[in-house]
Image 1 (cartoon, one colour):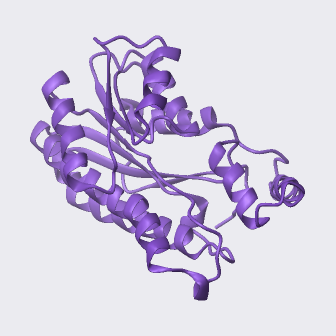
Image 2 (cartoon, rainbow, N blue to C red):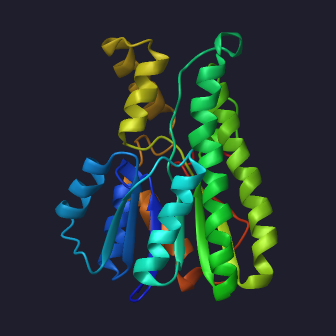
Length: 259
């Protein structure tokens, strides 16, 4: 896959999956826009991957803030003149709590990033792509967007919301030659999974290790996925190789959830 001359925005670019998407696309000659709330972390990714000022842009942004989302899109247009790809990837796992324990603060935090962040990204990227009459968007949901898990109501329901937004965006964009798809990672070897393991174990190191073993054993392939395996699918969906693929959902979970 060759992305030479194409500009791609990646939110959550400092995270495990986001960083590997940046690496994959940069290696394929894309111009990459690294968006994350942690500016030091994305600058470190930019440096580690040997990205230059000519082929990359670092933007600190809180995706739950509409003005900051508009700003990262505007900055992309200002520097690169277009948006060919958008990886709407930023997300948080939130607390592991039963429904009756969830607070308004918990809700606002998880839905602010996982739902508002995705919605605002679509709101400001779609008009650019529609005007270009081209573009590909990949929204990062999760297998949690396909199932229900005890004590993960906010994460699960927010990822179900991403699936709904994806379907609507794909329907609205198709006539403009703009494609919109989701990826649904399962247990992937990232810091987010370390957080989930710790959360379900109530902070116990021993319990977190037991949770990791249980997740691992539940996967038919008997291992966690790696971030680059998710990045490979995302890159395919962004590429011209997937030119007739839209409104689809790609589960990347080693066969864990047969739904």
